Amino acid sequence: MKEGNAAMVDRSLDKEFDVLKNDLGTLKEDVSNIAKLLAKKGTAQFNDAVDSGKARVQAGVGVLEEQVTARPLTSLLLAFGIGIMLGKITQR
Image 1 (cartoon, helix red, strand yellow):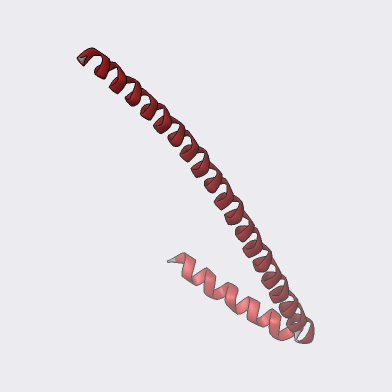
Image 2: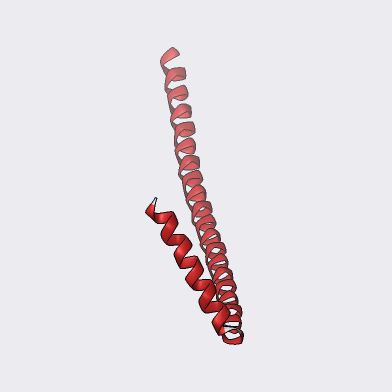
């Protein structure tokens, strides 16, 4: 009798182990899918931030061009002064 019960317990454990293996496989797939979705979302957000940054830079360049066009001599003197200051800073 004991051998019969032991065999039943072994079969029951084998079935539970198989169920556990299947559940772990499913969990692995789910985690993989979630990771892929998060990566796609992160990439989309990064691309949006880059596009926003490009637009801001382009707007800044446009404003700078307008200022240089409106006051060319002032812009030239300002650029010269900044160049001298950077030269002094880098010499140290």
